[in-house]
Length: 491
Image (cartoon, rainbow, N blue to C red; front, side, top):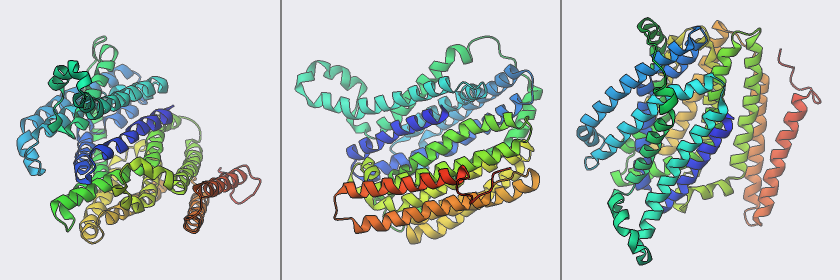
C-alpha cells in the first residue's frame, strides 16, 4: 500500500515533467524549478529535524503513545512557525543571495510550503505507526492530485480561456486569479495550495480533537535522540540536492547556459523516479516495521530476507527503465532534454545504493548509536562537496551524477561494516553482487542489441527487451526456489 501510494504519487508528479518542459521549452526556465526544489528538500530536514524517526523509536518504548504524539506535534508546530516567519521576514536578502533578486515571492511561497509540510509530518508518521497504509495512501494521493490539478489549471486552462473570445464571460474572473507574468511561479503556487489543503485534511482529527498531553521531560529525551538525525538528514540532502545547486555556480559557462544545463539535469534526474519511488515507499513501510520486528525473535533473519528481495526488485526496476528507455524518454517532452539521458543508468544505481543504505541504517537506530550514523552521513557530504567542486568544472552534470553514485556506494559500504560490528545481520553478499552482475550483463546485451537493431521496427527492440526481462525473472525464480542451487538459503 505504501508502494502504491508512493509510486502513484510519483507518477502523477512525473506527468508534470512533460507538461512543464512543453510549456517552458527553454531548459533554463525549468532550471529555476529544479534549483528551488533542491533548496526545499534541504530545508525540509531542518524543519522536521528527525522527529519522524524519533516518533517511531519512542512509540516503541513508551506505553503512552498519545503523549509521544502530542509532544512531537507541539515541537514541530512551534518550530515551523518560527522558521517560516524567519524566511518570510528575510525573503528579499535571501532572494538576492540566490541570484533571484526580482522574485522574493518565491522565498515566501516556499517558506509556507515548508511550514505546512512539516506540521503534517507527524500525522503521516502516526498513520504509518498505526499500520493504516490505506488512509496514508489516500491522503498522499489527494495532496499530489491537488497539486497536479492546479498545475494544469494555471498553466493550461487559464491561458487557454483567456486566448478564446468564446469564453469572454469568464475573463474578468480569470484575470483576478491569473497573471501570465508569474510563469513558472504557478508551479510553486500549486504546491503551496496542495500543502495547505493537506493540513486542512488532518486538522479536525489530528490537530483540534482532544487535549494535548505535553511532557517536557520526554521532549528533552526525544531531542537528544533526534539531534544526530538532523545531521544525518542535512548531510543526506547535501548528497541528494547540493549538486543541483552547485551546478549553477561551478559550470564553466555563462549563467544562462548554466541554468539550461541545470534544467536538463533536473528533468533527466526524474527519469530515475521508479527507483526513487520504490526506495521511498519501501522506507516508509520498513522503518516502523523494523522497529516492530526488533522485539521479535531473530529479527536479523527478517532484515536479511527483506534486503534480498529489495535487491531483486531494484535490479528489475533498473532493467525495466534502461531496456525501455525509448519509451520512457518521451516523458521528458521536448527533445532538447534528451542529451542528458546518459546520466540515467548512473543515477538509477546511485539511488539503488541509497536504498540499500537505508536498509542498513537500522543498526544504529536500534542500538541508539545515531552519532555514528551522523558520521557516515558527514563522510558522504564531504565526498559530495569535494568531488562536485572538482568534477563539475570538468564534466558538468555527468560529473555530478558519478559523484552521487560514489557517495551512496561509500556510505553503503561503511554502514555495512559498522553494522556488522554493532548489530550483525546475515546479509547474503553473494546474492547481492550476483543479482547486480546479472542485471548489468543483461543491460549491456540489450544496449548492444538495440544499437544493431536501430534501423529495424521498434517492435523488435521491445520484444528483445521483454525477453531479457523474462530471462532475469526466470533465473531469479530458479535461484530463489532452489531449482538451481547457486545461493544457499538465508539462515
